[in-house]
Length: 79
Image 1: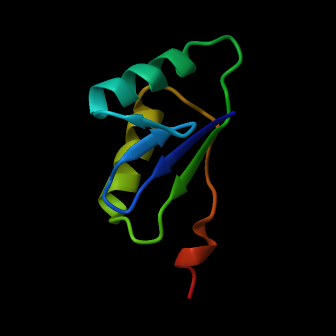
Image 2: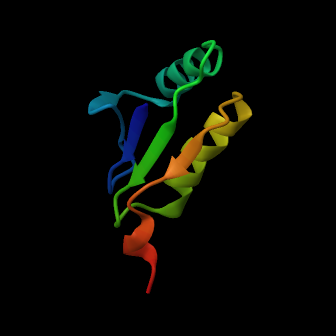
């Protein structure tokens, strides 16, 4: 399992480690996508983050072939 957090300012963390930019994130996603057994990706957005940052991570993961992606902690967005 991989936990990807998207902080309030759009900073992305991979299992708690800050990812310096989109190329590094996509390299990690690409590596995860080609493993024989893909890991589950748990995407945890901060409640203050702009939606565009979260959807960008999701779009990259899907485009690179990851199949098991779930948003966790999204209850904070439900009114």
